[in-house]
Image: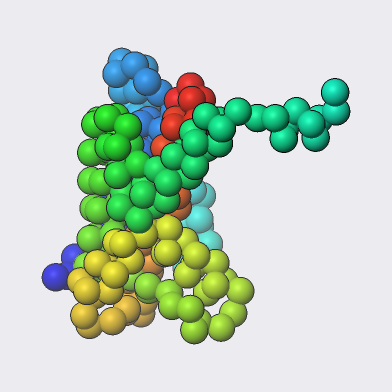
Length: 60
Length: 138
């Protein structure tokens, strides 16, 4: 069994799974949980892509 | 009355509850989601089983580094602790990763992070199950 995920695919999968786990750990009501998961996922992606772009000038 | 006397006089029911909470925490560590399932928290149980399972499955499939006790340096020891956090899934990852780790590619390195994240999330879930069994609002 081999998975060859790209950088973006790996980040998306990681961010989604960890956000869902955080949502289930910290919120009880389904609506609060869904909002928390969406917010956490958005922040993961924003920071991930933001840090990626911030490093871009030093990558070559 | 001193604090020591108060602790000594704790009712046996509290001790039973604490022992049950510890057992549920350990069960949750050994099998992701079991600590919650035994408390009939089905949604959380299923969520943690799937999340930890997918992270381990994909992490091992990406040929991430699964640390062992013979690793040597401090970072490897921390990695081993994180990987052990997956409980019984540690052996599942070993079973899946028959070709051994390959961190010469980016996906192998990501796989290492996936495996460590699975362990840490499972430890958090086990702690959550323990706290819920103790009666803490969770």
